[in-house]
Length: 260
Image (cartoon, rainbow, N blue to C red; front, side, top):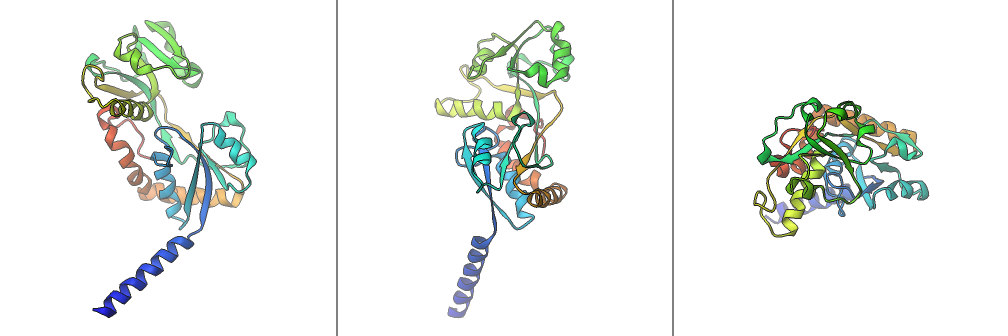
């Protein structure tokens, strides 16, 4: 028995030492619903952990306010990479392939029972967008003349109130971000999802999927990441790793969130 205990302890020590010695990749990331929270927990974090596991590497996430993660990468040479980089940000380094994909569409009160499958189905509806939505989604710009009304919310606007108060019919948004923010507010208020103050919502994906990239300081690191990314995607490990971040919000997003 003592021999078995000693062997088990030795194995545990070896595994711990191996895990501790695993090379880390320091990554600047933003605090953004559906991607990374303050503790770097979220769907994008799960995807990157699954990707790096293919290469026996461990990501070390350092969170920043949105936009400051780009500057942190530029100013601090200790960062190997930065996650979620928009082309318009003009961040230096070597861009990766898309490591995770998002889907935008419309959120609305489930009680309205709207039958929306394409942007053409928005005809006659009061639509609330976000700043720059018509530039980001050309299909939306094309149907503007057919909408009952269209306006874009300023930053920080409580879009959920516009829906709950029936000021608009639909809100253009990223489905998972909307669902997480909505349910977070329900929980913070000690309320119940689906009651009169927090009515049930539904999201329908309408626009093409959008991919998010990493930027790397070294080209070799980017190439390693891309190889591990494609291996992880082909094996299904990204889809498996990110599922737990989406499942709690299925009552709103359904199957609209891309699997990887």
